[in-house]
Amino acid sequence: MNPPRPAVGPDLRISVVICVHTEDRWEDILAAVASVRAQSHPAHELLLVVDHHQRLLDRLTKHFARAPGGTRLSGPPPAPPLRVLANAGPRGLSAGRNTGIAAADGEVIAFLDDDAVAERDWLRHFAAAYADPAVMAVGGRTEPVWESGRRPLWFPEEFDWVVGCTYRGLPAGKVRVRNVLGGNASFRRVAFDLAGGFTTGIGRDGDRRPLGCEETELCIRISQVLPDAVLLIDDRAVIHHRVPAERRRFRYFRGRAYAEGLSKALVARSVGARDGLAAERRHTVRVLPAGVLRGVRDALLGRPGGAARAGAIVAGAAAAAGGYAWGTVRARAKPTPLPPGPVDDPAGGPAAAAHEGAPA
Image (tube, rainbow, N blue to C red; front, side):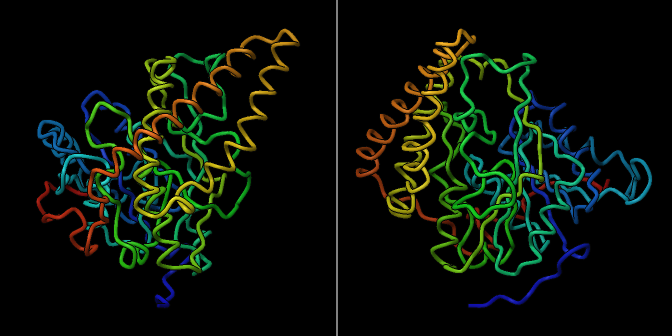
């Protein structure tokens, strides 16, 4: 099936979805919104999807209703219309994103984490990539902003995905990839129409375990449904992601790696182990051993943190493998997670069940 060629360049309409779930990130949410409003390629609209948190929903609705429509931040262009929506599906990031997809009307839908800020040309680089009609998804580079002011000496860059950031081992430049990273990603609308939305039951759902991989499963599914689809990462599309102090701890590192293994088991069951684990095998065989050797070398040269980084890589890989093994056993006893149905109701409920803030 060949979808019609959409608008490109400055005429491409990009809807931006930010999923939010806690008042603890209030200042982060406002900073994320401000960064979207300041884009050199103006967003078509901005959707804030609140995950089953009535007080936050009311607070955001009231806050953004104060500003009159068409308010300009620092001259043209005017800020995009903003709507505050309630997650219309079950608790979790996947259903929240699906609610945003259902409500959006841009040709492209971009996702930004609620604790990240986008650089001014973020959407411009996304829009340029969609000039090729074969491109179905474009991601960018996510840089960590450590709340403590600096990276822990023991924390290996090969595991920056633990804190939601671009990690050592991803190719540089504008390159074709298996999957984009969900906190800094965009998808052509037609991809959701043909492949469905984000599958619930794989990623974060309010449980204590920091699960993930919902965007990995979606990207693989898009490629299976559309074999000629091109998925890209353009590392000029940059966002800066805040890493809170608690995520500097080894306990979180190990737990997140284990949870990734659990999630990968669900992905492999949903789309097949060959597609679901291809990139992970390459990372494990090529990137991680090189990281261990680099850490050992630094230790022998007396550089601080070298031995600890090498040890963390081994511990993280072991935790992820353990999570995958247990997740595989556990997944056999559960139904395979199914992707949502029609894109106009991807969360399984009325997406219109939402509060709207005045255009701001």
